[in-house]
Length: 238
Picture 1 (cartoon, rainbow, N blue to C red):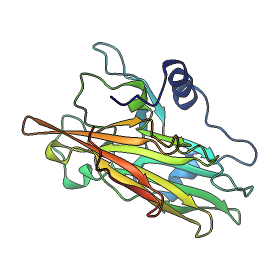
Picture 2: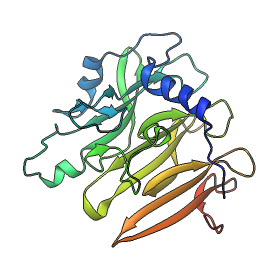
Picture 3: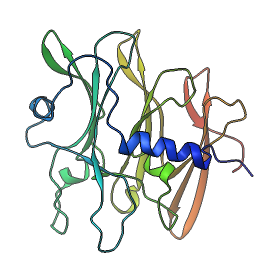
C-alpha cells in the first residue's frame, strides 16, 4: 500500500498557505482586478475557488482565483488568474459555451502595459474535480487552483482542475514555465478524482487518478518521465 504524500501537520500548513493567507508578492506593482478584467474577453468574471466542503445551510467559502508571483528570476511579477467567460447561471438552461467557460491565464506587465502571455483555453464550467469519495480531502481542494513546487527544485508548477457535466467528468492539469522559451509547458493532463502519492525517488509525486463510469471505478497511476519531461501512465498497479 502506498503512503500518501502529505502528512497531517504539513497538510494543514499547506492548506493555510494556499487558501487562508494572501497571495505571495515580494516586490513590484500588483495588478488590480479591474486591470486584469480589462485584458480578458468581454463579460469575463474572476473565478471563486471553493475552500471548504459543501455544508447544508452554510454559505460556501470561496477565494478569488488570483495569484501574483515570480515564475522566473527576473524582477517582473506575473499574475495567474482563473476566470469564467460567462457568469454562473445555476438552474437555468445552459448553452454549449457555458460548458467551456473555465480558463486560466498568465498575465504580466510589459512596457507599462498588461499583456496576456498565455491562456489555457476554455474547458468545463467550474474549478473542481468529479469525485468518487463522499467528500473532497484538503489535499484535493488544494489542487483546484494553485502553485506547487512538486519536485522540490525551488520552482513552482501551476496546478488546476476543471469539471464538466456527465460523462465529461473532470480534468487535472500541471503546467510549468520554460524560462528559455518563455512559454508555459503542459507536463500532465488526466481525468478523474486526483490524489498525489509519494514517489520512490522522493521527487515528482505519483499521481493516482480514479474515475467512475457505468458503476465501475477505474484507477490509473501516472509517473514523471525525466526523458519526456512530462507525466505518463505507469505500468505499476495501484
